Image (cartoon, rainbow, N blue to C red):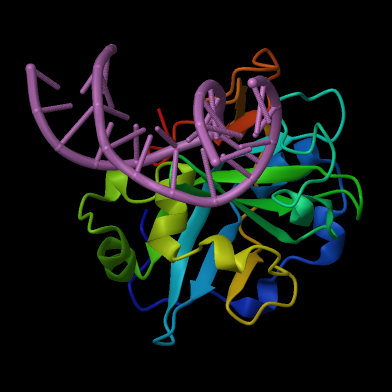
Length: 203
DNA sequence: TAAACGATCTGCT
DNA sequence: GCAGATCGTTTAT
């Protein structure tokens, strides 16, 4: 399951702007199985495989931060596709990637990864040894890979330290759609996507 | 400027 | 499984 400690993510497999230029729902599904990687200050790539995402739409989605239009907080959600949107909630941070096109305001919340690279580094970041509680939730994930509010607006296509890479293709049957977690509006939309049976997804 | 509210997590049962 | 911590942003006064 887990990759050998010494294997490195291959930056040649980086996703393009085109990948993120689809609807949030499509991108949310397609991000499953991709690798989220971050270069630390000490020159080490850390991260893992995306196993859980949620789509937040621009229209007809009252749960989306963009629903009431642009504010200071959600500005980056309206940027070019492939831009990082980091927001704070409950004194923690969560990360999204914008989708579709500039000015739309749709994005995908990355909720959980399967730890693969730099596990020891992520454990230190979180003061958490247990793998099952290392990156299992959007705020845990951000803390583990050291993403915070100052990284809002980072371009995932060109950034030297943060990237998403292609992985083994995922079959539709491996994807499970459920209600999104922790929201009070538009609860009936099935916009949360999980790699079926993966132990690193939340819940 | 005050009050309320989260796209949450942790620690303790 | 549940109560409580925690703090930036939004909304009300």
